[in-house]
Image (cartoon, rainbow, N blue to C red; front, side):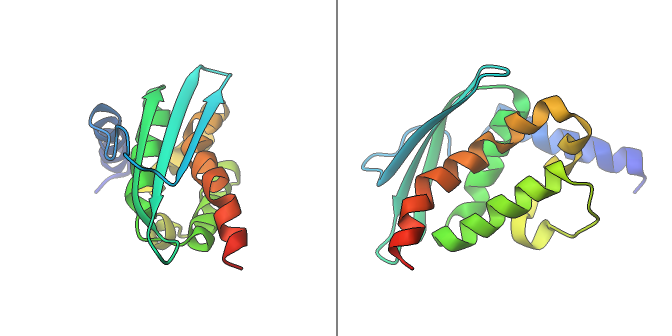
Length: 150
């Protein structure tokens, strides 16, 4: 597959997640709730998380408004964090941030799954905050939970 075809596939995946986001809506009886805003472009993300008895993410939902990158990133993030512990999510958030802010040649796919398609956001510094909004939200929502299980 040519690089151009691969870029088109990645764009298509991002548009699909933005148009039909996974885990979009509200979560009854959420254990954690957080709202974050990106003042740069007006993105608003409300995140709700349900934890199981072991402290792992049992379910997750997001709502709010935002650009294509923000919505796609939130959709991909929710897919990838279900079943993970707060410590695992912390590793994922750190890897995601590194992936789109540093120009390192690493394989993030094992840790981030489909969210690795957002790696190209690094070429557009104005969009980095859009892409990281959901990842910052899950990190902040679980931060206290992670410390409680240490």
